[in-house]
Amino acid sequence: MELPRIRPTRAEVDLGALVRNVRALRSVAPGVALLAMVKADAYGHGAALIARALETEGVEMLGVALVEEGLALRQAGVGTDILVLGGAYEGAWEAMVQVGLCPAVFREDHLEALAAAARKLGTVPRAHLKVDTGMARLGAQPQEVPALLARARVLQVDVQGVMSHFANADLADAGVTQEQLKMFRAVLAQVDAAGFRPRWRHLANSAAMVALPAAREGESLNLVRPGLALYGISPAPWIVPPQPLEPVLSWKTAVVHLKTVPPGTAVSYGGTWTAQRPTRIATLPVGYADGYPRRLSNRGQVLVRGQRAPLVGRVCMDLCMVDVTDVAGAALGDEVVLLGRQGSEQVGAVELAGWLETIPYEVLCGVGARVPRVAVRTTAGAVPRPVP
Ligand SMILES: *Cc1c(COP(=O)(O)O)cnc(C)c1O
Image (cartoon, rainbow, N blue to C red; front, top):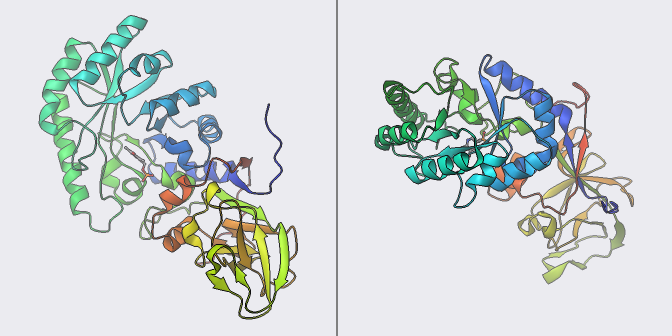
C-alpha cells in the first residue's frame, strides 16, 4: 500500500518537457538512434517514470549503470532494450540474461560468464563491446580488442555494439576528445577487419552529441547516449542545442511556519546567522535528509512569490529557514521553489551546483529518496522560457 503524501515537499517531474527534450535532441542528430541514459534513478528523476515515458516516445534503447537498475526497470514493465554500461559483477549474468538486459563487456571472463549464462537459459548471448579510448575507467584497451573478438567468435556471442566513452567532451578544448574519436575509429576498423558487423557503434554523451557532429555522423557512428541533456540541462554553458532544452525536475515545498523575530535572534543550530533587523523567518520542511545539502546554509536561495529569499542559519536534517522579510505578503502555506521556476525567477541546477561548488549532475542525483517524485505534463509554451 502506498503511504499518504502529507508533507508538501516534492519533486515535480515534467514528462512534457522530457518529451520535448527528446524531440529537440532528435532534431540535433536526425537519423541517429537514441539510447537514453536512465542510470542513477534517471538522474534523480525516477527511473520507472522516466523510462516509461521514453518508451512511449520510442527511444531505441535505455542505458543503466547497474544490473539492479535494469532489473528494476523490467519489474516496472519496461520492455525497451536496456544496455548495462557498468558491466556485470559475478553472479549477475543469469539474472541479466533472464530479463533480456544487454551487458557492456570488456574482458574475456565477461564473455565466458555471459556465454555460460545464456547457454544455461537457452538463449543467444549478446553484448556491446566496451573499449577504453582515453577515459581509463572501464573498457578493454584497444590492443586487446582482436583477442576479445576471437573469444566472442568461439563462444558465439552476438556482438551487437561497440562503444567507448569521452572524458572531456564538455571542455571547450576538443583535443582529447578528437584523439579519443580517432582511436575509436581505429577500433571500429579492427572490428570490421575481424569480420564483425555490430549494428550499434557509439560514444557520444550529451556534450559530444550536441557539440561534435563527427561523433554521431549516422553512418559509422549511429547511436548516441545523452543523459543530462534529456533532463533539460546543458553539460556546459557553451554547449547550446539549436532548440532550447527545458529542465524536467522542479523541487518544491511550502512555508510550514512563519514568524517575526527581533534583531539579535540567532537562527538554527550553532547560531551561524543572526537577525540584524526585525526579520520574517519562514520554516521549510526540507533538509539534508532529503538531499538538500547542509552546505547551502547561509549560501543558497529559494523562490517565494516569485522572489529570491536567502537561506539563513544551518540547514537541518528535516527543515531549513529562509528570510522572507523582503517578500511582500509572504504567508503560511506559500509555495517555495528550491529548484525550478516560479513566476519570472528561476533557480536552475547549474546555479545550485555553483553554490555547492559541484556540477548539476550531482545536484540532480542528490535529490533524496524521501522526496516523492510527482509526474506532471506541461504542454509546449506553457512554461515561460528563461529570459536571456
Ligand atoms: C552517464 C553516461 C552517459 C551520459 O552522459 P551525459 O553527460 O549525462 O550525457 C553516456 N555514456 C556513459 C558510459 C555514461 O556513463
